[in-house]
Length: 211
Image (cartoon, rainbow, N blue to C red):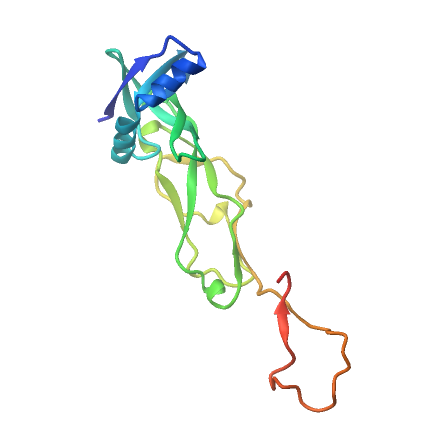
């Protein structure tokens, strides 16, 4: 069952009107979709936060606009970088029986063995595009990297998941890799070295590249 979020239609679009909405603890929003006319609305910031905690970032919300309900999912939002608040949100009107394309966060879990051996973890992909019915959209897709060694990679084909959704990426696309430890280079101070053993018996002073 969808969680209900109250919304009211917006009829003024001047900057002063938007400021008044935000000053009142609300967030301007828009509802859009293939089978609906785009409609500007606003919702309570506190109620939106409470709703997202209940259904999750990708959950289905029953948006009640002045008494008329529409199932939606939150597809995008604009954030105020300074005040850390949400300035605007986009709601996609959905049919629970129809599949949609959405982006889902990709999370690497576990401590990679290769990192423990000095390797450097690289994650080139942080979001995955998937196709799913609204009720089956995962909050995030987790990939275990515990056994990933230095020089190894994980690709889309290595993702193990259960659910009625499709990942819209090439199977060979790399999602994580462990690079070898950074090479060390010998410092050349430009001074003539005296014969004999260096002060550091294990070798001269070294520094990683880039430092």
